[in-house]
Image (cartoon, rainbow, N blue to C red; front, side, top):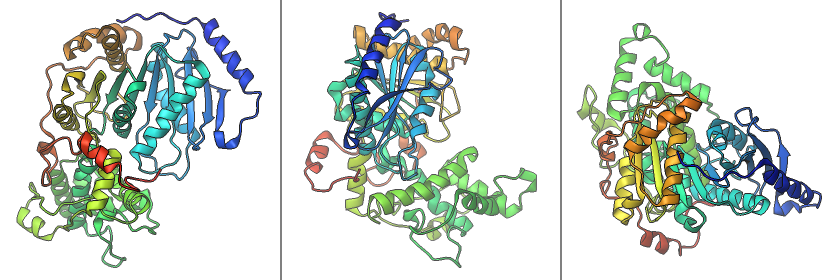
Length: 470
């Protein structure tokens, strides 16, 4: 384990007292609110002090400083995206509790809830960087600063260190959407059209029709419960196999075989391809289509010929595809230590996203700064605390000594952390994921990574109105 000097509780308390004094001065609303002392969530209440606030863009944030702070900071990017209109003040506090292991390992922690719900990777990058700046203004410059993101937050954190490389010494990406949005959601595009081919109830023939790349009509009042009801009607996914009709079972078998989506997350993937696609298309891209399946050949069903003749086809609007790519795709052009940790059986962000990211880093010439670690776990939203602690310790040692870690070394260190957390060690140092195209049907050009080079990103950045509006 890496051992860093600890800052005593008295030192942290002195900083907190200075901060409290600063709170006596009125803060203009346009400048946001300074951190105010707050109750810590249960996971860190016994080891840290906490603050919350709201930045100038309206993004709520949460801060934790351990009583025995090691002097370093973890800047967290949350996943999702959530689809509520406004920033949720509880979101960052909930994430602090979920990743309490960071504070328990001695790191200060700050996370943003983002200024609004809905899609927007660069918006989330700006708000995450704002949270770091709030921390620095209140507590001073940390010894080292690390970015961390999970799920969509992995994409946010990876883009964060590309945009602000000088502010971070290292980055930990866990179960991250590392193929970006322009390709990272293709399997949900496929699910949306394949589902409609077999089920024909989303929309029903009696309802207003719309192209499926929209996910859902802009003014639709459909709810998640309503979507689940339609999915159950078509596939019986909530029923025991013996209680399904023969047609329901065949529909379910075909949808799962063609899309390679796990049955246990079928509903959540279809929900994303419905409600989040609606947000991306109608609220972020002004009704333009960023998705394509024109050249995809679907296979694995009981009748592939009929499926490919009957499935809805469409091509992306080039400007929409460009804007989504610029907003969320990764160039790989970052030269700081990068460690990823991914569940091998992640049912939401398939482990093959890691292959896309490795090829992205290879294409950018930065693969020497990437170490990928895989864990024999099967959940998406959280991993073993022992694994998180071992990965974070390996990343910290890398930034301090320059010695690049190995998956075997991370695995060997995990039992020492498991003595504290007792959540198990599942790292498999021999695992290597298959290519992304083995899991997700590639579109034309889909074997080339990165999807956007650093030079292309710079060129596009000169286009007025590029990307997604914050």
